[in-house]
Image (cartoon, rainbow, N blue to C red; front, top):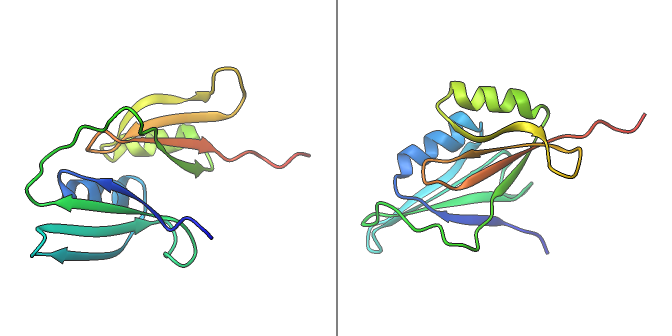
Length: 131
């Protein structure tokens, strides 16, 4: 077994696609409209679906926004340099909600940004191999 995807409901598909592809650098893997159901599914990821888990962005045509709920946490993405990833995100219009730095009670360097719908994305800096 393996994780295939995580589904997020988004209010504005074009804004979300721009964020995930331009700010985060994911690829649009596939997109399909379902006119009878009045929704669109778009799959984005760093790898193709056969190689890794992806995000399914679900846009219900008649819903402009969602309550994120209390149970949702965040999406985590490994980056080489969390400080640089924050700077890149800001230059591309991304909203950094926690600047890069060591996590409380630890040494792992993390940062948080938000997508256009308010979903949190955590950057986790890749650890260097022990010397």
